[in-house]
Amino acid sequence: QVQLVESGGGLVQTGGSLRLSCAVSGSIFRFNIMGWYHQAPGKQRELVATIRSGGTTNYADSVKGRFTISRDNAKNTVYLQMNSLKSEDTAVYLCYAASNFRDYWGQGTQVTVSP
Image (cartoon, rainbow, N blue to C red; front, side, top):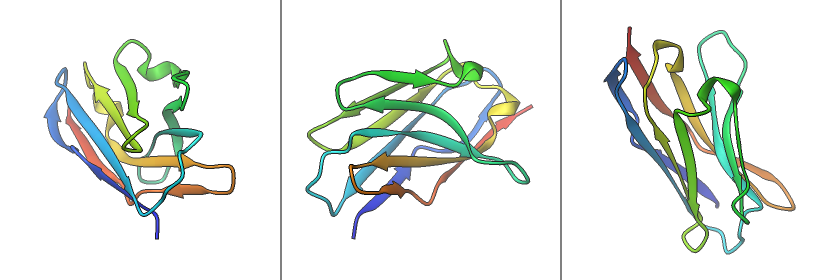
């Protein structure tokens, strides 16, 4: 089965940085789009950033200028560099990958930013 495994989450102070990684295994397919969403308790899942196989990126307004998404197409791996973290960034961050056939989600990694 396709698995998306996130890593790099943790506890960081306001203004700090984290780098999230998502490694995809179990698939021979290249994904059209990969990215990151986050979800806080009691809130809907929200887009953070996405990147297409050709390199086109999209960011939520709240993270523009602070977060950078990148991917390694050969490894089907996506990264999220998070700088200048704020308390409102606190959430479970979920890796996302979409092929022509279906969407895949990771289990999530917790990012907690101390206020």
